Image (cartoon, rainbow, N blue to C red; front, side, top):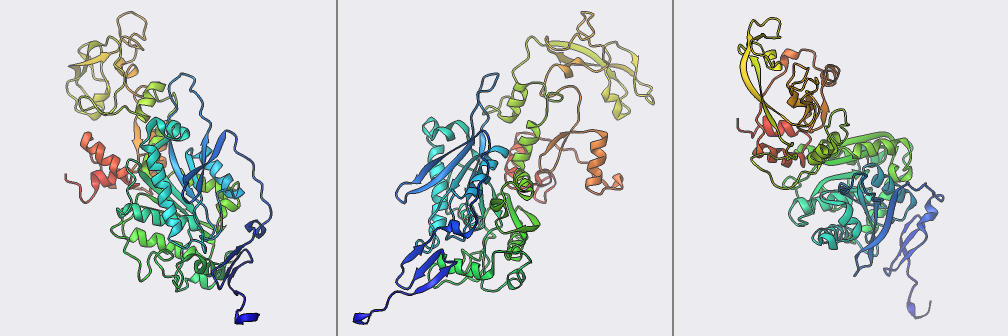
Length: 524
């Protein structure tokens, strides 16, 4: 060439789709050529729209939600958690428009259910890291801005979003991005109040390191994502001259800041068995657990990298979505109460008070049902001896009857007062005396949140379920208890203070009751 100038040379080529030239020029081809055309069915009832979250950079997100329906009995729809999603692509490829990822987001919006925000972000090598992480931060700042607008927020968010229940998820590079957003939030570098991030989900996350792990050195059978592909993507996305031990690629590299002081809410880490990143991701979860972070590890031994978006309607995707529903204890408490049917919950109003209590509390009570109309005080009699625990289970409307416990010789002479609502089953025997034909006090049938006398079990993660002999035996078998004499019984008091402690723990742990009542720091 004349003038002594040579044409720019290709210095990096990723599968013919991204070519980086020596003069910094980047030439891209259609990434759809990497795989055959995809088509997945839409999910009935799910709406979506594209929204700009950074006008300066022209960055968009796709918002998904279930179509809002007016409840049959009036009132408003319950608010849904918000799930912020970041797609994969090695920080160099991908978009929320990719059919497989779009289908995943529809399923998540319908089945979790949630308001899903699937965000695009800047890609390398045109925009090298940490540009994408800055964009992830911008998504949360945008969400915070709408949380402060009240009725002036985006209509879908104003109608449906619960800004106090925000989860962040990402697949592959999106999982790496979710980790770094978590670090910025948990270290105080980023504040998004009143938005509250209560959990993270890292799905086959894209991490790296200068030293090969065993599954990188010898890739598992069937792994389509190779170490060479991973290396090229890191060279195209990391700052020029950086190695794979850069803190973005390797959270535990020699120059990476310690994660020990970072406050993490519950984190779900999903690993594929047929993925070169298997060992690195398992190591990531183990290191966080070693720092006593609330981490749950789910390994899909027969699956490959990106299995959720590659097969969004496959059985592994079905299983993963069920696992995603369980992240954090608040979701379990909410979901298990929501699933109690009319057999247990007295009315729709009672369930609504439990699931969406009004702000504040009166006379030390956290949950307030409407007062029953014209309550009537009534005197009944209990065993005066109370020699046996079972004695407390019986009352009588006639004084001096024998105690109903066979081995007890006491008499029902101890007067107690119950309050019977004027409506309900206070006169279920039909004789007009306001008494029930049952030996139980009829107050149990006319007030409160639940029907009758039912024992409910609250698990350590706050799952609530009706207790029975069968469920009790199942529970003992689940925990491998063969000698019930080894079980410890502890009676605890739950007041406003303990309630607040349980709420705080539920956002950070799946062992809420242990943390609050049996934890090492608990004062007895």
